[in-house]
Length: 407
Image 1: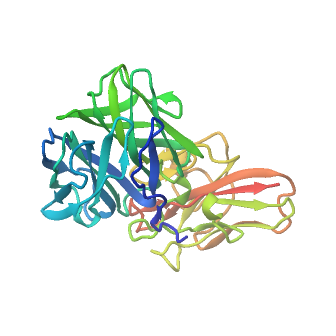
Image 2: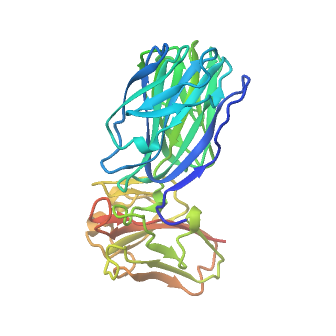
């Protein structure tokens, strides 16, 4: 897959069915690239129509909408095919794609080409028997945004009292992620909790809207593999329809050429950036060569860089100051890390970027080579900084990172 390309997988398009108490939210779409997402909603009485102004606030100027959908819910017993109008465009009628155990139907209209940025959008949908509000989910891309994954769950479930509702996500990595949640029913209270991967989320914000609908935002630690999101209600009844997990920045992707796009791999081990896992596996006697290429903005070089090697695999995100970006480990500019073992620095400013432990020359260059291999099992991680006018900071970019496993 091309570096920095927007990867869009349409995994499941849900069809309406008569679900029992096991009804839940399921992953319907997964996006990856320089992206972000927002969930905005309005509360209404919804008899017979729900209407109002939905405000999108977080799209940067020039952002492109990858996907957007308008949602409404209703109790069984009214029209089976409500219609909608969004931003002055008649969307036509639709049928429910899911129903929760208490008989609440959920409807969706795709509005991707109509969401053009951060502004107000007038919406109306109906007729309904009782619709508590309208929700809008937007996934968008912009070169200034970090590389990450957004997992989009939708469906219908209801819960309350001592019952806990849960949905799961696959596809994001370790770090700190954000989740958008849309519910209806009894207003959210300070006694209601959200749990991410078993831990109570302390970074939580919510807005109770007119008509007993709620938008909540939570941030917590994510992990590789399956991530869980649970809602623990306090003696209240709720219906849950949307959950969007925004994964942590893909720290090993770096941000070389991010302003011009796509993000570019400059760091290779044996001419490989490590594939999707960003990992190169070698035998103890396999030759090894670490190289740094010039970024597209400086195709012939020279492109000064500071490259670092840490023992072991990467274990976290090291945010860098001045809008430079995020790395998978703490570089000297971010305070350093005790596992840092080697520095190649021809970028300068050693008091900030580290004093070189090995000589090097600006990219394109061969940084390290050993035709006889390392001779023993080892794991280390390599990442650095490189001069790049097309980086988000317009000065230096974070290179891609590569984990090397010798066994």
